Length: 195
Image (tube, rainbow, N blue to C red; front, side, top):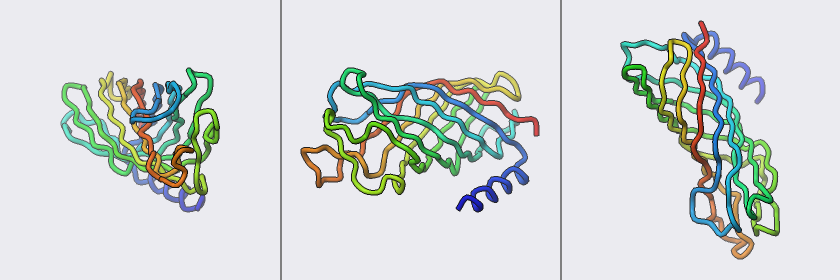
């Protein structure tokens, strides 16, 4: 599997007419109804590399794709404890609209959870069922910002994850229904590599 991924990345780098790197930092918390005791937020951060991003003032509509890694989750018990999830994700198609250097972007994505901490905690009555490594997320990211020049972009981002299976309350241990929407707002910085 690692060889396939590396071969795919090498193909993308060789074939791409433009490459960018991007990083985000922001708030992450449960956005859906929940029974968690005093839920709160944690810091979300992400790093990604994208392809096919060719800055061109004549293109109002554009698309690209990206892969990355991020950390998201939430806190509970008045910030005393937290749940932290790490994932690697793929944005197969990132759509953007740019006018007068202002860009709006929407990107659906699929993620694969790599690591978690704080999930099996009796105080907040959460259980995790099944093989954790096989769990996936789906989500959306939205960005609105300004292209400072051909190389630099700064903007606001809203990032929302839904873990597919995994979060379940002790009071209903056999019901697979509490798939929380987790996310929040943040800042995004992008650098288009000279290619």
